[in-house]
Image: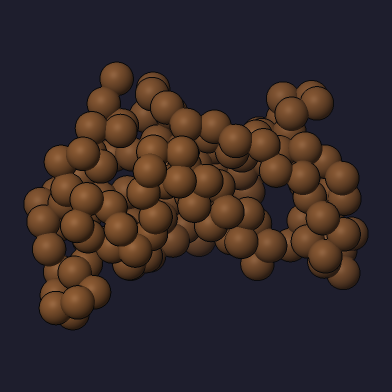
Length: 141
């Protein structure tokens, strides 16, 4: 079986910390995969807000998540502090990838890598649109 492999760019310009909540714990006693997706969403929303954007307004466009992939590296548990670093790569005319490294703040263990493919979208016209240049610039070194 082929495994998901996510390469990270050298430059991950945004980082935020999140705590694992008790509601994020699954029956295995560790961070659930569904909860990790929610934590990535929170981190992405924080990154956008930090730059004056939202998922619905990025220089005249919104974004749609076209695909997602996660590669788990280690367990995370209730009350762990996680650092989520975000970068961008593989941009095209209308989309690109946001990539994430999730690490345990206390011991530095990498918990997961993730990628969300995004497409820029004009919600008013219900059409795909060109990537806003100011968004791409967020990820340039």
